[in-house]
Image: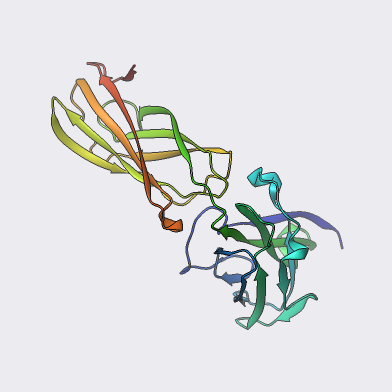
Length: 269
């Protein structure tokens, strides 16, 4: 049989959740592991792997470096990660298996390193001519050395646009931020909007995707309001970060925007 290109699901890489699991090729919980402990500390945990399909599957557990996606210089995971499953194992429909992991925070780690643990399934796909397809679900393990972390976030460009054409639609606000520290951050925040000194709305900023050390990322906030009068508006991004490390900080980025009589929006420098 012919094997075609892999199909990959990496849910935990994008969002932090311990309630949902990876609902696709196999169901894996938790979807993200974040370890923030002093160098030398040993931390153990368990992945719960379930086969949600109506056929037997063979599951292979494969840790892989993922610096191409993060841009980080990673320490080889072979020196700090151990998994209880080194050979493929079979799961019947709805059967559950447990994969233990043990992490030793490297003694020479400054800041952060990570690994992506893939759970691979090889399946015969009848709808694709009977070829064998490799599908894999990825769970990231982030390891941060406590007392070596530096936190920094710089707010960059902002933008504003209507979600649809015209002023009778919500506004999508965006802000670019850059991580100037050595551990990943998951910023939270909102946009305050006012007109002629009167508060109008606070639009909550999307949360979930990490911004990695030295990297930049764009976050958005969507207004609930969908009817905007022409005029000049004052706005301000308020961005919080670092609370996951017990060091909550705040950045603010004020700006102005104008809506004209034709329903067009423009930033005012």
